[in-house]
Image (cartoon, rainbow, N blue to C red; front, side, top):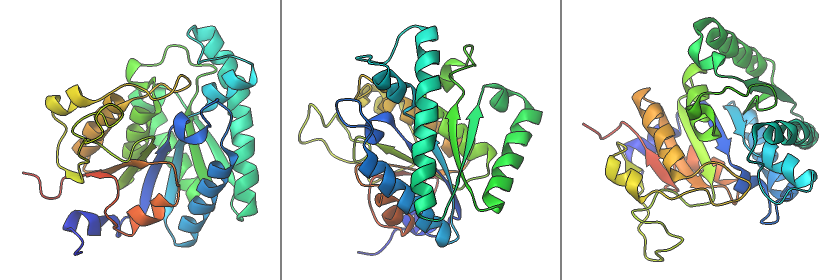
Length: 271
């Protein structure tokens, strides 16, 4: 099959943000899926070996912390989320660091607050930090600073939107959102087995938002609505977006080789 111009453009992108959600990082019982995380680290390291520049936006800190603390679900009160984040963030980064070292890479943690979006100086500082980390051969791993920042903007309460902001200020050309679905469907595939997967889209419409469902996990926060909001923002910045399944992190290699997987949101072909 001939590659579409939009998919061909993906092969030319050098810098990308990859966002992975809690449901892709954990087993159904809430414990970390170590095999999947290790494979993700292998893929990230291999992409760096191909001279790609990948920034990872990872969810999971609160969910991992909640599980470690014996909670059945994500805590609802702010102080509970702070405590779970403090525990989970340390655990998650240690695991990323250990796996990446196996593949001769090191992780660099970046915790962001709303000031990095609103304040031009802090946004520039964040951009400079990301650029230097990549220049030195490390892999930036980004999360919201949920332990300290309790006054976050509503739109930063999920890492889908955060990843779009990161893609914008870091001058990335592509945002890949790895989720528990294969992409964006015309109906919720969990309740409609014959739902159709969209391959390429040029916009996010109100009708599309009506078909979007909620979070697929008691430990996660995002859903398809937040991903569509992130896609809309990224499209406004002329950033390509791919929504795809996070079940096998090697899908990143397929996406960047132009293979038709997931749903691509792009300005190519639009009016």
